[in-house]
Image (cartoon, rainbow, N blue to C red; front, side):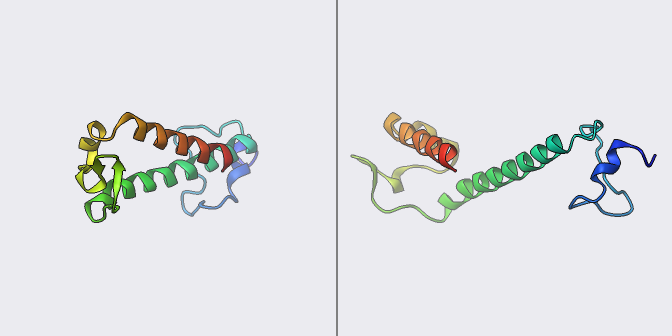
Length: 107
């Protein structure tokens, strides 16, 4: 058992006794350190995106920007949650997707 490729990850952050390195899906059977690192980075990024999504869903319950989203649509008139999908104009969605694309490209 000491020659197992899984031993390559026994010293990684998050490995705790008594279980040690736990990989129930067997995604690290080959012991590829680069693939392990990429999966860990991806897991962190997805976790951060999920936290931001939760905050984006909760925040409008308590705060609305002053002013207007479009020429005749104020931020206060936009409902919370999924009901907002039908209220925001197409140009607003275009702005949102372009902003996200810019952030993804440069950061």
